[in-house]
Length: 334
Image (tube, rainbow, N blue to C red; front, side, top):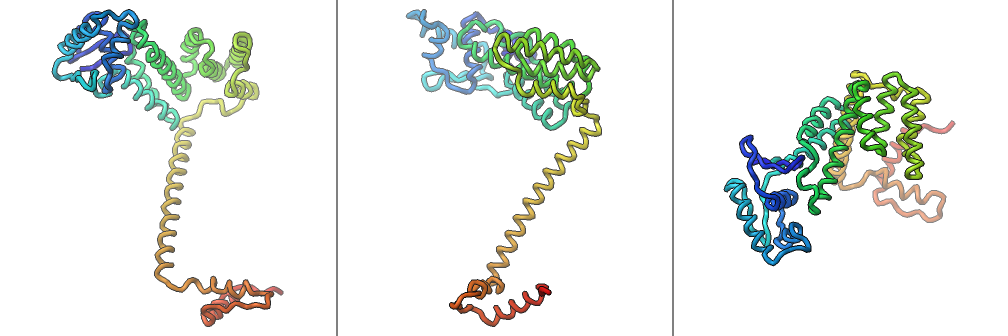
């Protein structure tokens, strides 16, 4: 069975929607899903479902809701009584919100690695799971508000990441209208405004890109009393000087960048392995030779240079021969 939170609450078995029941029963299921694989106490369920208006029959009503919910879920979807509460045992992939979060993370990692095609595929798949506002039919419930806000923020972040991948793939002209609509809904979102500025600049509309910055600055100063962030200010300056870094990277540049990153990682790994081998071999060789390097013994003589007190070298014959070899290899001053 799959559970859908990215829209009205829905339970699906074999591709078909399952009737969950009335409002209280749906609220119980939603609360258990938001805390999947965790014990949700009976007291918390009663407080969340009835609040201060909890009737004297609330405990019995909860028992009835749990019993009905178990019939809806069936034996293949365990709803377990444990520790004075209930646990809904589900796999993360059974809940669309968890799948969305996994795909969002995959998309962000792909963008960071310079793989916009893979990022776009993951982010499109994640955003396609949404069927409306998160828990749209239960958004008014106090227990759902925090999670609804969190999921909606992640939805907007996924949209920004998808736009980022689209810009890297050269789709700047097609993204302008979408970005303008997004900014109308989220006027204080600086990342969206920066993406619109970049899309306009790459489309040969530099003046419009700079106008977006001016409008953003005016709004931030007037409404919040703050200046745009460093990233947006730097983007404005880059546009003014026609910084080549703003141009879309060519496929060859992207491949070169990925090869450079891979080579750097390989060199770092090889360097670490080589250092470990040297330490191990030197350590083993040193432990096999009981006498230390005779040149080190000469520190007795060097330490005594210019002093009236000469400590005796513990291996004078070897020390002398080593000093002779060392002196033979050292060029004499003319």
